Length: 137
Image 1 (tube, helix red, strand yellow):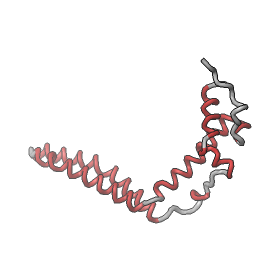
Image 2: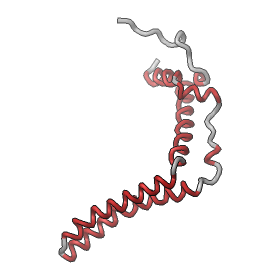
Image 3: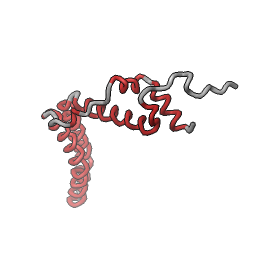
Image 4: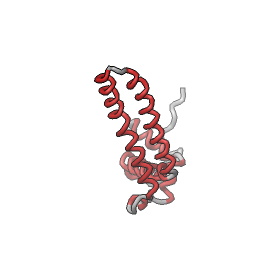
């Protein structure tokens, strides 16, 4: 038995994999429209990424052109503070939805990965007797 299959068997015995035996991962959360708070929060987080580096580049160009290094020296930390503040506000607005969507997706992905590796054994994790005996030294 190769290492990938052995690892998958061990994962299938864990509590996370046993959740699948209770029922398949429900992806219906992705069919509907996402909550407005999630959209606004993710938008603010995206804007925080998009604004920081271009703003620093502009500050560097203006500082070089005017011969005033103080513009760059004080502007860069201010740009980072603005970007981080925007990211934190976006995270707070998005709230628990920021965790719920990836959690559902990764549970579904883990179960499908186990099914691919284990094949027919994925439905029920094997008992200790069915696995290979441990090598004693």
